[in-house]
Structure formats: structure tokens, C-alpha cells
Image (cartoon, rainbow, N blue to C red; front, top):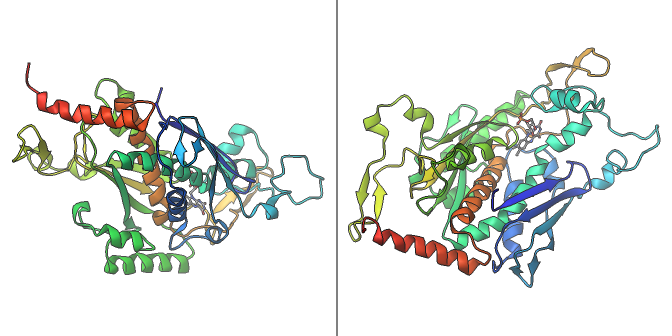
Length: 392
Ligand SMILES: Cc1cc2nc3c(=O)[nH]c(=O)nc-3n(C[C@H](O)[C@H](O)[C@H](O)COP(=O)(O)O)c2cc1C
């Protein structure tokens, strides 16, 4: 069982989202401004629908933190939906009168969870599916991960992300030469002014054409210890765990570690990452390149972990596709609700959240303890033990 886990609950237009986080050690100093800052990052995005203006997410801490420190108990959070007043009948937990508008949806949005969900759960109101399939749920994941981010930062790990492509506009720069301060300030999470302009243009044109576009985001974890994950069982492999976590993000349809896809069409001599010893300490090794994206044999190899995530275009469009009504069986136009044009920049903090959650589990698996001091001690001990490597 994973050492670190979290569960979320809540519908998109319901009263709010709740989260239970389990596994964070005691003794972690929690700065609530940092949690707020991470929640805000998820809301910034060019080409976002009107929902972002309504959402002013605050994760209220209900338990697990005392006087500014984690106490080792489960942490529970509550993220209130500021728009619930407008949905109190439609999303009421109680039965409502027949004449009340419950915002029933019977027309399928192709590419959304509507069709398989309605049939699987036997709902004649697709709202019962779309409310939970909505990416609103990812606010809860970002909230959970913001605690785990503090944990990782205490172990020296940092996580960042950028948009690698929007539609057919691509960022060709390698992650090692990116100005991350620029990315952080960019509404489209682009790595340069030129690219920012191109990303905005392609989003504006997409909007004019009344369609949507996807893209690729890149998430990077730096200063990672060697040896997270394991080669010994399929479910212990770090790359496998990361791929599953990323795939669980709404609209994600592909995951690549390092230059995974390019590597497959290259020669072995050109892509395998050669090791060299450190000048000062020959027992300290590093790789000349990082085509593998920091993972070999399902284990971190000490280089930054680089994950590229492909996101499909949003299914809800102002010029809708033809579809069906599940109750009448008739051909109809898919419905349109307020929706994003391009969600790549907003997906970045969500990708970061999922990488953080997997790495937190991996650190706890390897260096686990009940208090932060114990974990730091275990990590230091492991690093020092490398000096003994090779001695019998
Ligand atoms: C940040 C983000 C925002 C999204 N916003 C919307 C949206 O406004 N409208 C929509 O139809 N889908 C949106 N999606 C995608 C749907 O949630 C997703 O396509 C749907 O749940 C079906 O799941 P699948 O695409 O993973 O198969 C968004 C996804 C992300 C990551």
C-alpha cells in the first residue's frame, strides 16, 4: 500500500470539494499562503472559460494541522464553491419539486464522459456524470499536492512546468535552458516572449473558428535522489506510476518520459545517457545527457525527471458536433456550456500536482518515518552510504 494517499469528493457545481490526505509526517511547517498561491496558479490561464472568474479557491484546513505544523494525522480540506447559490436546486441533495429546473442534460457531448458514464451508471440525466468528470475536481488535487510540495521542498526537490505546444505551435528549447521565471509570469506558460505571442495567436484564432485545441505540457522535478521506485515488480516502477498519475488527469491522452518518442526512432549510440564521475568525488556520478528523463529501470537515476503530457482539445465547443439525445434516441446538436478554448496552461499545475503526489509516495516508501526529522535523517544516511559503495 502506498505510504501517501489522498481522496477527493465533490461535484463541479456542488457545495464544494473535500479532500482527505493521509501519510504526511509530523513536524512539517505549513505556510497557508503557499497553499493559497498554488490554488491561484491553477486558475490562471489564457483561453479559459468564465468559470475561472467565479472560482476564487481557498482550501480551508479542517484537521491535521495544529499551530502551523502537521501532526501526523490525516489532513482534511474543504474548498467551497462560491457559485453554489445558483445551483442549490439543481445540485440539491434532497428531492426537489417536479417544476424546479434541475438543469437536466440528456444530450451527449462527444469526447466527454457523458455517453459511457450515463450507460454504465444508468442515469437518464447526464449531469450525474459530467459534474464529477469535470476538471473542477483537480482543484482538490492541487490543494492536496500543495502540502506534499512543502514536504518535497524540505528534501530539496523542486517542481516546475511549462507548455511545450499549443496545437501545432511548438517550443523547441530544451528544458535545461528555459527561463523558468519568465514561464511563471506568462499567462500561457511559454518560455519566451516570441512563443507567448504565438501561443496567444493560435488560441485567439481557435476561438474565432469556434473550435478548441490541445497541446503538450512538460513537468520537471529537480534534485531527485537516486533510487526512487524499483525494477523488481511492475507496480513499483516509478515511470509506470508517473504515467498512471498523469493519465488520470482529465483530457490527458499520452505520457512521455524524457525524449521517449524521439528516442524510439534514434540510434542507441545517440540517446543513451553516458555516466561520468564527479571531479571531486569519484563516487558521485552524473550523466552527460538526460534523454531518459531521469528514470532507468523504473528507478530515478539522479537526473531531473522530465515528463511530457499530451492533452486533447476540449470537447465542449461553441460550434457543437452532432450528437444524440440518450432519452429520445434522436440525433441532436451537442450542448454548449461555458467552456475553455485551450486548457494547457491550466493543466500545468495539475501535472505538477500529480508528479508531486507520486514523488512524495516514493520518498516516503524509501525514507519513511513519522516525523520530518526522521525522514531527513534517513535520506542523509542513504546519501552518505554511497561513499561505502564498492567496499566489502
Ligand atoms: C484544466 C482542464 C480544464 C478543462 N476544462 C474543460 C471544459 O471547460 N470543458 C470540457 O468539455 N472539458 C474540459 N476539460 C476536459 C474534460 O474534463 C475531459 O475531457 C472529460 O472529463 C473526459 O475525460 P477524458 O478526456 O479524460 O476522456 C478540462 C480538462 C482540464 C485538464
